[in-house]
Length: 291
Length: 292
Image 1 (spheres, rainbow over the protein chains, first blue to last red):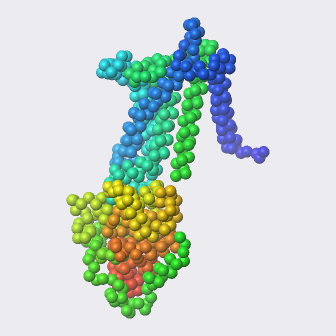
Image 2 (image 1 turned 90 degrees about the horizontal axis):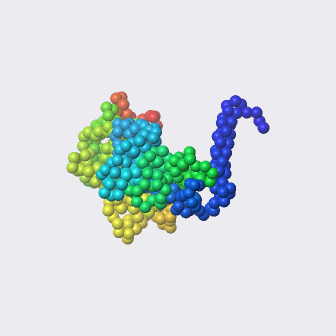
C-alpha cells in the first residue's frame, strides 16, 4: 500500500472510526434486540399482540409492542398532517412571496427554532398546551389534557423548521426562468406557483415531509411529557397513548431480565422504522436527480 | 432534425444583401408596406433600475406583420426595451419605465391595464429554451389551460396547430404525452417554447436572442420559422448575430451605450439600409465590425 501523507491518514482514520462505530452500534442493537426471541424464547408473533404486560411479578407476562408501534406511527402522522400545510406554506411564502427583509428575518428565526432543546418544547406543552386542552376542550374528551393530540401538536411544532427549510430549498432550486416562462404566458403569479413551482418541487417537498417524519419518530422527551404514556392502541385524539421512544425512556431504569430485552426489541423496531424512512428519502432523492 | 434542405430554403427565400442591392433600394423591392398600421410604439421611453438609467429616450414604431431586429453591443439596453412591451420589466425590483409604450395605440402602462392581459397579447421567447418539466403536450397546453380552456378536443386542436406553426409537429407527434419537453434537443426545445407562446394566441412575439444557445442548423430552423410567422404576427427579435438580423428582419434598430453608460437608440431603418448604407457613423462601425 502506498504511503499516505498526514492529512490523508487523519481523515481516513476519522472515517474508519465513524464507520466502525456505526457498524458496531447497528450490530449491537440487532444482537440485543433479538435476545427476547432467542434467549427468552418469546415467539416473534407475540410482539404484534396489543397487550403489554412486562412486569415479572404479575401473572402472564406478554410483550405486545403493537400499542407502541401504532402509537409512534399515529403521533407521527398527525404531527405531519398538522405541520405540512403550515411549513410548506411558510416555505412558499419565504421563497416566492416574501420581500427581502421578511426573508432575512424568517431564515434565522427557523435556525433558532431548530436550536431550541426538546425539553423546552415539552415543558411548554406540559405547562400550556395540556392544561389548555383540559380546561377548554374537556367536553371533547380531553379528561386530563395528556393525549395523542397534545403529543402530535408538540411534535408538529418541532418538525416545522425541518420541513420548512428543506421545502424552501426545493422551491428555491426551481429555476427562475420557469416562473418567468409562466408569467410571460400571461398567467398570474399564483398560477405560476401552483402549476409550475409546486409540481417542479414536489419530490423535494415529499423528501422534506419524510425528513420531518423521521425526526418525529425519534423524538422522545417532549412527546413523553405530554402524551400520557398509556400503552393502548390509539383510538381517540383526546386520550393518552404512548410511543416506542417514550416507553423506552420511562422503563429503562426499572426493567430487568426479559422486560429489559423487550425494550431492546423496541429499540430495534424503532431503528427499522427509521431505516425505512432513510430508504424512502433515498428513493425520492433518486427520482429527483433523474428528472 | 438536421436536414440540409432547411438551410437551402433559408438562403433561397432570404438572400443576403449585396452591395448591388443598395442602388436599387426601393420600398416596393424590399417588400415593406409603408402604410402598415403601427403595432408597437415606444415614445421617449427611459428605463431605470433603481438610480441607474439603463436606456434613455427611445422612440420607435414597429409596424404590424413585420420583423424588427434590435442589435447593438452588450449592455446597450436592447433586451430591456424589448421587455417593456410585455411588461416583464415589472418583475425586476426597482425597475421603472418612463415615457409611453403602446400596443395598438393603447398605453400598456396605464393604471387600468393588467400586466397579465398585456402578456397574453405579447408573447416572449427567452434566450435559453425553458420548457416546463412536463410532457410536450402539457407544455403547449399550459397557457390555454391557465386561461380557462378545458375542452379536451379544443386543447388537442390548439396543441396540434401551435406545434405545426412552430414546425415541430412532425418531429414530436408520436410522443406528445410520453416525452418530457426537457428530453428534446436544444433547437426542438426552443421551437416548443415558440409553440407554447403561439398557443396563447398572441398578436406580438418578442424574442430575446432566441438562437444564442443553439447550433447553426437549429438556428436556421428558427430563422425560417420567423419568416413564416410574420405573416400572422408582429415580431421583435433581439440578436447579437448581425447576419441573423440581416436574414430575418425587415427593419433593424441599432442601440449603443452612451458616455453616460445609458443605452440609446442610434438608428432605425430598413434592414437593408442599416447593413449597407447606414446614416450614422456609429452604426456603420458596428455593422462593419469595427466596434465591440
